[in-house]
Length: 170
Image (tube, rainbow, N blue to C red; front, side):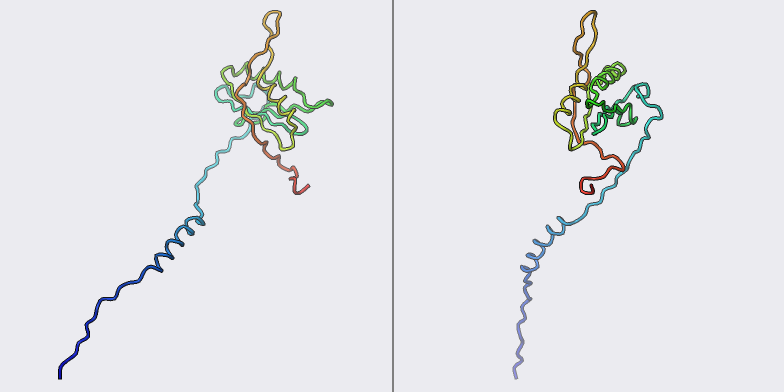
């Protein structure tokens, strides 16, 4: 009797469904992945003394923070220089301007400053503080002329004070 042999062909792999799954799954996994970042915080303690004399002579990062009850002038690295409390008539722009002039005498080459305002600060207050930081007055002989103090102004949000209630909590 003749022997019958089956001719076996190699099986073809059907991977279309698998490729479809990979095409959808890979972008999804990449978009939901959490990328970890290594962060190092460098903390600088504020200076023990306050005032213009405590500022370092080589690197000034001038910040003016507008609060509802005062204007805080400080160095980002060295800490608070002076807190100018409000007068009964509002913010004390004259004291701010004279403080800016004192700082400019100590740092004649610096032209940049940052004005940080809280979210409910009126626009007029922001503009007047920027003007006091940007331009001051100098006496030259018998004349009083406007002098450029810190014309390169950056504006941002004021940091939240520790212990102050948030808007949602108040």
